[in-house]
Structures are given as C-alpha cells and as structure tokens.
Amino acid sequence: MTGTVDVTTGALVARRPVGAYHALSIAAPAIAANAAPGQFVSVGVDAADTVLRRPFAIAGVDTGAGTIELVMAVVGAGTAWLASRPVSTPLDIVGPLGTSFVPPERPARCLLVGGGYGVAPLAWSASRLAAGGNAVELLNGARTASVLYPVAPRPGQVTIHEVTQDGSRGATGLVTDALRARLADHPGQHDGTPTVVHACGPMPMLVAVAGVCAAHDVACQVAVEEHMGCSIGVCMTCVVPTVAGNVRSCIDGPVLDAARIEWTSVLGRRSGPTARATSTNRGDHAGSGRP
Image 1 (cartoon, rainbow, N blue to C red):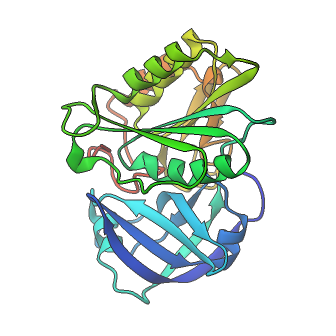
Image 2: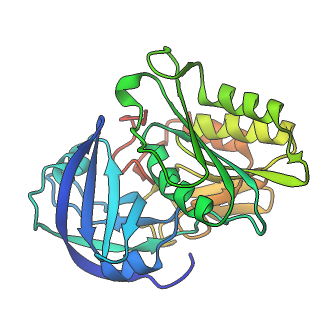
C-alpha cells in the first residue's frame, strides 16, 4: 500500500450507464488527489445478507471536482445495491488502497491489455501515460460487443484496438491474440524504445498475458483479481503466491510484476472448492464472473 489512505463518507454525485456497466461518480477529494491507476477503494454496502465491504478499481478521478469514478457490473446483492443508489446517497469509502501501475522511467511503447470492464482503469492510465510522452496502445477485449467496455477516443498518442471472441466488433479472437500479434510486429526493444505491458482483467486472461510477455521477454505488470475480505492486509484471504513467497494482493498489490507470480498455483487454487468472497474490480461474490 502506498501514499495516504482516506476514510470518508462521500456523496454519490452521478450515476450513468456505460455500455453494459454502471459508472458511479463519488465525491471524495482526498482520494481523488492521491489515487493512481491500478489502485482501488473499499466501499461499504447496506444490502440485505451482505457483510463485507466491496473493493472496486478506481476508473478515473477529477481532481478539480474532487470526485472519483468507479465502474461495475451488477453481479450480486452488493453491486445491485450500489448501482441503484439515488444521487446524493452518502457512501462509506476507504482509499486509495493498494499499489498502482508504475510508469516507464523513460518514454516507452506501452501496450495496455484489458478484458471486460477491467479496461476501465486502463483507459485512465492510457491518458496519463500518453501525457508522459509514451506511445500507448489500448487492447480492449471481451466475449461479445455487448460486454465490450466502451472506451472514448483518448487524447494524445493512444491507439485503441477492439477484439471480441465472436467477432461482433473489432478483430475476432482473444485479446491475447492481439497482444501476441502486436509483439510479433514490434519486439520488446524496437529502435531503442522499450515495450512494456500493463494488464487488468480476469485471472485466466492475466495468465495468458504473462505467458505471452515472458515468451517475448517483455516487462509486464498485472492488476490481479483476487478474493478480498478486509482490503487492508488483515484477513489474509487475498494472498498471491510469488517466487518470493505469498504476498497480500490488497496491500502488496493488486498491481504486481507478472514475472514474480506463481501462476500455476494461482489457477489451481481458484479452481478449487474454497474460491469465495470478493475481488478487486468485481465487487461482488464469486460465481458471478467478470466478462
């Protein structure tokens, strides 16, 4: 966990549909001032039969207005409660939490790979990276056009590639197919400019992204989707196995170096009977899935 964490009650300023998802704008000036792409907030919910707070990746900030934006799919009681709150509803929020994507030390070619509404924080990151002089490509993938996260044109050097598995929009295939093709066209080092990859989305997608990057010797950071209970490093439900031992994704992540993660152990555990609770950028109970 980095920087100052604020515990606040922020009013819901606006709520709007974004494609198949819901975007919430929430007044939280201190969080907006300190947040960076990849970090998340923990939100209290007051829905029936819910106990745990819900973690959500921060999808953007407006420091002038003092607001943060969250993007969610309705996948259970907690997200249904949040998505139906009227404007001005007070919300109990803690954040920013966790680690953020680390920008390149010098101008680089940045490939941002996202699946479903995991693309939302990457779209925010794309604007920041482009403003820092990086050449940015955003690879936006989903099963179908209906659940593709709608990314508005970004200012600066941001190129957007859309990929759907059924070919209903953009290229046909997996977003990792598009990543593999982009890396084949331009290797990790091209005319002295390094390539880096940042990814956010379902764990199976992250596994595939990490594998492609390892095969091409490209640096890769991933925002892991792990189950979270407390979001502050106490409950130990979100541990991620790495080459240096277990780390807690809520305070040591969620953004981690992909090369450090023991991916085989991660997948084996998630397919077992103990998969449960909530995960970053999903915000509701397991079994609901993320596009």
